[in-house]
Image (cartoon, rainbow, N blue to C red; front, side, top):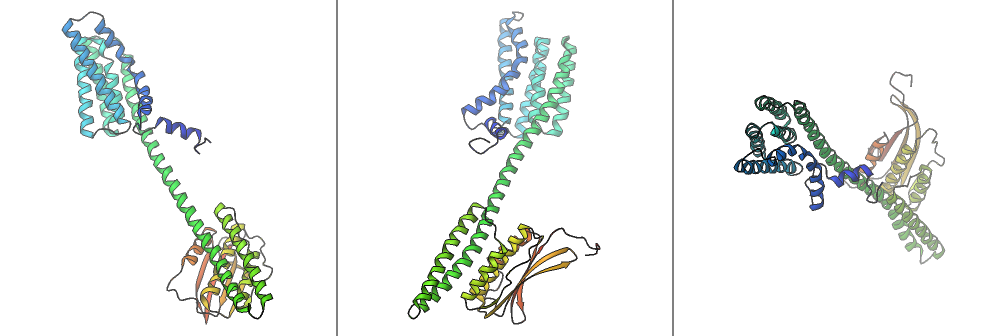
Length: 396
């Protein structure tokens, strides 16, 4: 990994800017270096013009035509790296290059046949895939016919022209794939950031909702005890300090992403919270967590915390029963958490943020959540898979 957090291969890709328009002069020069070595095939026409075999006017016209051909080629290929021309403009330039290659080869001789190499490269790099196949083939055929006319004996150029054209089509497809992968990587990074924000929002809601509710209850209780029972009020204040410190530790751990909620701890905390709220509680002391995966245990612990928080804050219940049972279903063994109270279940008309986040947690662990009115109270049931899952018909 590099200092900017990218692997070496990705940093190298970004330095070259594959499939991107040059953002500054330095990038433009690097891209130009990739193009200039291919101008070696222009050596033969240049040597022909300096050999003295042509008149002054013909030599001057040849230099102008060669400069025009080179400028059009470089413009097409360079612009195609970032901000390509429209389809009609590209087609017109390709036709111009082909016409110049034919005219100059027929006029000045076989030394100029190498210009067809650049026409083939341009066809493969700039034209749409379905058109490029025919354009490269037509350019190769044109070179063959011009070679026959001019008496060219370097027939290896025909293979070079054909292969370079198809190779540039492959390079173009590779660049397009690179661009798409870069966009996909950016999308994945954005989704990961969104998922992390959702995780943090769920954790903070569950942590602070439970802890602040307990602090509020104990603060009210301490206020009522203060005039007549200062010792008991002091104990409540000490409990508030302890809960506050633990909440701070939990929030820091949730932000860092290393916290795992334990079900025995939440059962003990539920007993304390319900008692402080004046709710008669029936809570199992020692849960049986054999063969329970850590993810499943953590999901049930969050479910218990959310359920107890709702009982304390919203239900107005006088009694709450917590049960933890192992059950066998057609889908396999599950551990079921049931929290039932005799309260109203709150005044909300739909599921709140806590139940929504809890449903997401349980689904990630392969579990389910049921919550709603039950008899004369409210009931929340959370189930998570335990151990290896069996299949229907296996005798489970």
